[in-house]
Amino acid sequence: MKKLIAMALVVVMVLGFAACSTSNNQTSAATTTEQASASVSAETSVSASAEKGNPVIAFVPKVIGQAWWDYVRDSGVTKWAEENGMDVIYKGPTEVDAAAQVQIMTDLVAQGIDILCFSPNDPDACENICKEAMEKGIIVISTEARSMVNVNYDVESFSDAGLGAFMMDQLAAQMGEEGEYITMVGSMTMESHNNWADAAVARQQEAYPNMTLVADQRVSSDSDAEVAYQKTKELIKKYPNLKGILGTSSFDAPGAARAIEELGLTGKVFAISVALPSEVRDYLKDGVLQSVALWDPALAAKAMLNLAVMLYNGETIATGADLGVDSYTNVTVEGTVVVGQGWMAITKDNVDSFTF
Image 1 (cartoon, one colour):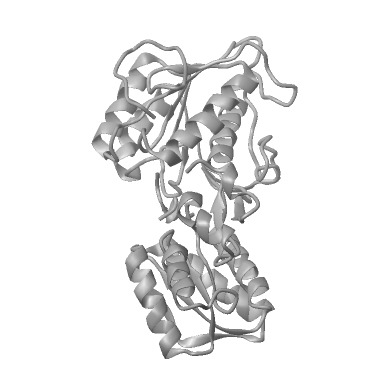
Image 2 (image 1 turned 60 degrees about the vertical axis):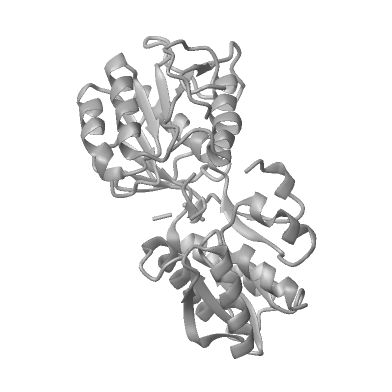
């Protein structure tokens, strides 16, 4: 998302991000308590061991009814279930509510599931129920929860250093690898945002000697597109040679793009941050922005599910493992944290493929 995005970042990013039903019936992942199922497995799919049969799997998102998590459900969990001939219970709170999410997880654990995948609203609040689940032999896989103790593994789409360097490479290409730039974060106290920005600056210093970080170095957008817009106008006035803005909040690029367009500086001043495709679609198509950074949360969900089934089948995971999903074919394992290379550039050419 430490976190991509706000974003979803992001989104922190990005700022983390399916129609709620309280029925216990299980039919299709289109609703919270229902299952995604399929009768035929794809050739590249994972499969349960013949002795144990298919596991009972639950996936608990941060919230349902939001575009980000609807996309995870439809393009991630449901498609995975169809490809692998397994059922997945997809159930989450109707609001970003840690207590409600923990209660859902508690109910699922009591039902006797074999696998619990989830993205916590509050990692600390989930520790006790995850500990109980693991004591019952349930495989527990989280995401966006690097610090959690009571999980088998936490799956992350990227390392902080990797995402920061990736965004700098994107910005440098747009700037012709020369000129003045500044970094923008959602908050000066938001650890992930500042880590990404630090990594971007380190990449610039290592690879792009003709780029210069201006004296202010870093400003905060307060995770607010309006603030990013106002700050961008102020920065361009203060630094007339400013050529690049590298943001880490999902609100930074949209706000900066508005200012760049308004000031008639398209093609002269460039901005990038993690961002939701829906928030930057027009700016990308109009050429005000060249790209923004993101990870595909549907791929992350598939990687989590594949990893869980591998563990269910008794396989072990180590650095270099292939989780069978793009961006997770050569993961790094750091303790219980599994890190992919899931960052990606959203451009005018692929922005319409995202529904959030």
